Amino acid sequence: MIAHRIAAGLRPDPARVVARLFLPGEEFHRAHSRASQVVGRVMSLAEDEVERLTAGLLRDFGGRHHNYQALLRRHASIVSAHIEEARELTAARTLLLGATFTAEYATEAAALCNPSAVLGPDQGGLRAGQARVALSVRGIGEGHISSIGFCSAVVGPGAQWSFEPRLLPVSVADTTPASWRRAHLHAVLADQGHLDELAEAVLHALPVEFEGADLERALAKTHRDLLTRASSAATVDLLRKVVSSAYNASFARDAGLGQRILSPSADEESNGNATQVATHACVPATRFRLRCYTWLAEPPRALSVARTCGTTARLRLRSACHALAHPSSVSGKVSTALNMPKALRRMII
Image (cartoon, rainbow, N blue to C red; front, side, top):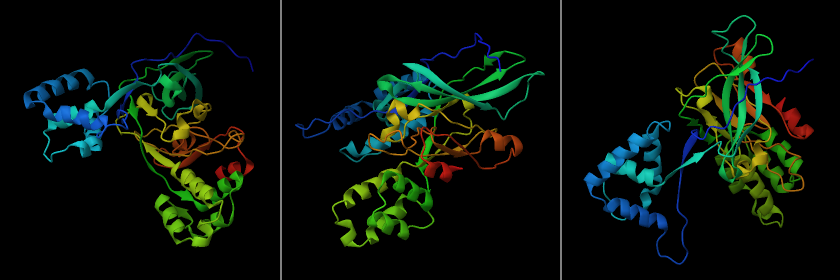
């Protein structure tokens, strides 16, 4: 095989920003948090001033974010407990309150790297000798926080490659807790060396497929003698961390592939190493689901298990290969690993 260097490139775009919840730090020596003071200032504004400020927000930022008003309302609901006097907020004041606790973050402010490509499901509008590929890329923002973005490119004819435009605004995936299979949890605990009596008892009490609530019920029914052993606290903590690290991610139906962003959803995923390897699959539909896992390990075994920011280790979704053969809704799995243990590889394949 002969490799050809081509001039095509994809550079970081500072306009690709996401709006995130921003909560000012609390000062221990104060009776009220800083959030309470900010909420108080917003609530003290006159209604005509609120409407003027909100109109400016929507004009300046409405086109920069996907479902901007819904996002502001969600952020407002998070801080609504700081409203001292119960009162019904107008639509404008709700949006202004949410905006006060919202910050923009440029997902590619530092770098754009680690591309991975698969054959794209949409091969329409191409000439003979061309093919469209779908790519995942690692965006690195301020604080070395990584996220996964997507784009597409046309290859051919011959040694040609051209990236297709990445549209704005970007759309961040909505995440919800995912279910686990008992055999998968058993493999993870075995790899971690935590298959003690407590872990075995909890696994026995769990159904074949379970969620976080099922784990808590199993722990509540566990015999007290097992829970009070010296090593039990570490086992319980690991069980909760591992199970909570699994989540489903879905995108808005009107978000194109190039607009989609997978942001860190667990503490371990904020580390740049968590997205060093990007495995992805894309689908022809306007919406797809991913099941994402963050495998936790303590040094020096941090590379003995796979980690993911919705990419590394295991993605369960409608993959490109299945989508090409079955465009309707066939579920597939795409996986890779960084020094993944054999137990996990057998679990995934």
